[in-house]
Length: 152
Image (cartoon, rainbow, N blue to C red; front, side, top):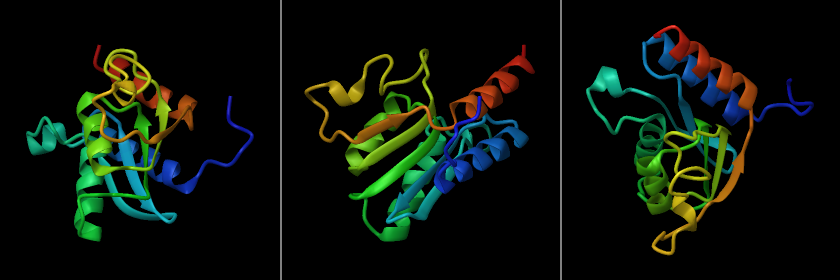
């Protein structure tokens, strides 16, 4: 069922990037970093294309945002992503000091925010963003299900 509220533009863009990743035969995940409502970094999964295990959508978007603003601290920035971040990406979110994390689908197998290790609840976590899950959940979930069903 579609939400009665309009989808925020950054999440719409993250979904567009997830579709682009799928067209490139990558796991369909997209991510966008915003500052004051403007997109300053975006990424889609690029693991296969780049032969890089760290080329998750979130990492690509965070790297681009840091280059664009000239600082590895993304204080005041928001991250919008179509799947709950994994431990690596959650660690990068903490180190970058991302203010708010918005994600579409929970990931019981690989997630580290509200599933698995729940990184931001650990006492060793340096920074904890505000977390908002479930935005565009139906669309992002259908995209992921379709991608993996086609490979089985």
